[in-house]
Image (cartoon, rainbow, N blue to C red; front, side):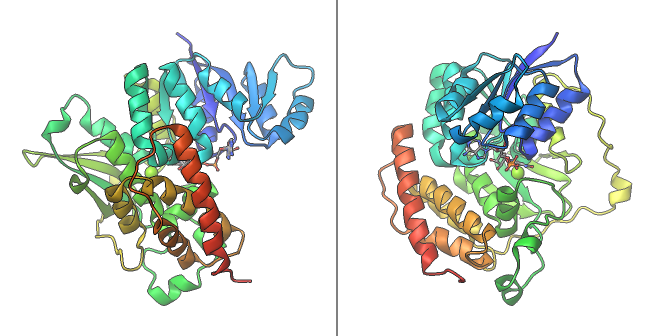
Length: 387
Ligand code: NAD
Ligand code: MG
């Protein structure tokens, strides 16, 4: 039977991987809506190829271009943040949440409030608003399927077992492109070096987050919300080959791991077909060819991001939302050549110094904290600017 799918963030890396699976399984999927921030040409091309009913650009200024690019088709075009939320509310079998950053928060909430099944890649939404989103999930009966490879691995390792039996969750981290670098080398790394991830092909923001290890810190918080075993039971281990995507240790000391190629189509396929499985045409894992799977501890002296994230979630209150906002600003500044690599975590840490103990109660509270934190992070940038 054909199932319907909406892809929020269709022009990005996760969007492309999702649509690639749809392309290989045309009898399984019918695309309802696709969204992007702007890139009207790319979005229109995807909407035409997959015969979507609706295409939405978040940036209203791009709506004219989108309409022009869709002229002569029956595909509806819309623009603006409200239109993104409307797309997220369309009843479909699966909504893939693949917008990057806090920009995805309101659409994710819209999809959750509808009570649908959401393949959640947009980790920043959970980091900023974990408790609020989880309460909404409980109210609406929505299903969150973790799409991030580590969380999808944990989800698969937990299948059929109770969380009470879990002793530890072990998140694996590739260590990023600078895993073997020393302190002096890290000070001078360039944007181009940071954008070259050794194992994964991903969007720019998450690639920089992987280089600073902020990605693993955000994933630590994401894991805490998705699998509430207690913060002291979530550990991080560096595994440079990115073959073991994470592990669950049970109280009898049995440890289950999920392995697979470093290709996001694997966890995405697991979400799309859940609770069944679907065929993918990816190259199967050849362990004899890979030869060695190695593991080492994280180095928080050189890569403080995982410590900063752990402290932020322990502190609670507004800290996780501030952390995420400051990181988005700092990563954008690094990508623009405004600050150095080591300044990214420094900006985040200095912005966090003004956190409030009171936790946000609503999405509006989170958006307010996010906006304030962005302003403070920008002030912190100025004192570090390279030019
Ligand atoms: P990307 O930058 O490649 O794509 C982001 C998508 O979001 C694009 O379609 C873009 O148009 C849209 N977008 C960006 N800003 C927007 C805005 N303000 N309003 C509306 N839409 C906007 O990012 P990606 O690598 O595909 O990552 C998407 C999400 O998935 C992120 O949260 C990331 O952390 C998570 N994730 C990605 C990977 C990966 O392999 N790429 C793996 C795990 C998790
Ligand atoms: Mg991940």
